[in-house]
Image (spheres, rainbow, N blue to C red):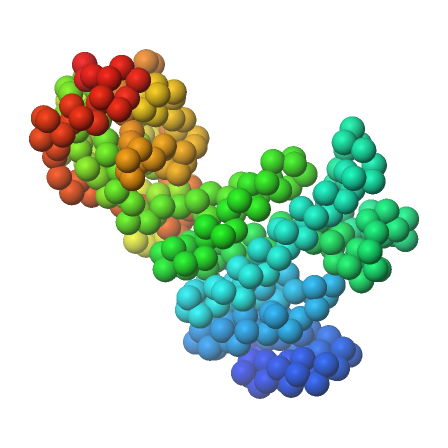
Length: 355
C-alpha cells in the first residue's frame, strides 16, 4: 500500500478538479496548493472515489514539469490503482514517465562518465549532490541538467506506481513493458539503483508457449505460461503440471505451494510454506537456468522458449510465496509432444538426444 488512509474529509473529485484547473492555467502556486490538498484527500478517500480519481491523476502527468513532483503524482495515481482504479486507464502516462526517467538517468550517467573519466564512480542517487558544480559538469542549459540530475535521484520513486499497473494487467504488460525493459536493465547494471522489482515486472511473460524436455524420460511437452514472477514460481508450476499430472516421475508440490503460486487473490503477508525442487532447469546448451532468475532467461529456439529438465543435482527448497503478491501465475499443459517431435527438439540441445 503506497499511502495510508485517514478518516473521511474533503470531496476528492472537487479537489482534483481544482488541481486540473491549476495545471491548465500553469499557475505554479495554485498547483502546489491543489496538489497538497489532493494528496491529503487521497489518504481520506473511499475506494470508490479512488477508482474515479486514478485516471484523472494519471492524465495530469504529462503536464507536470519533469523538475517538479511528477513521481509523487504518479505514486498518487498508483495508489488509486491499488484501491481499484483501472490499471489500463492509468498505465500509459505512468509508464511514459518511467521510461523518460530511466532515459534521463542513463543520460546523467553518460555525461558524468564523459566528464570525469570512466574510472570515477557514479554518485549515489541523493538530491544533496545537486549543486551548481554538478549542473556545470553535466553541461547543457541549467533546466536540462537539473532534469537529468533529478531523474538520477528519483528514478526509484517511479517503481511503486509502475508495479501497481504492471502487476494488475496483462494487457498493460503486453502493450508497454518491452519498450522499458532494456533501459531499466541498463540503469540497474550501473549499480546505483535498486530496480530489481521493476525489471522483473517488465520481463513477465504472458500467454507464452514453452517447449519443455524431460531428459530422464525423453518426453517433451508444450506448456503455456503467464504471470510468473520468477523461476522459483515456474519450477513449482512445472512440477505441478508434469509430476502432479502423472506425466513424469517425482514428488509433486504441495497443494498449498501451488495455491500460493496461482491464487487470483493477492497474497497477504509471508507464509512458512516450503516448496521442494523437482528438477534441474537447463538451457538448451546445458547451462543452468537459475531459480533466482526469470522465465525470460529461457532461450528462444525456432520461435519457442526451450527448457530442459533433468534430475536435480542436490536437494533444493525455498519459500513458496510468489515474488509479486498481486500477480497470480499460470502454467497449462497444452499438449504432449509425439516421440518424433520430442526427438527433434532434443536434437537442438547440447547433447542432441534424450536420456
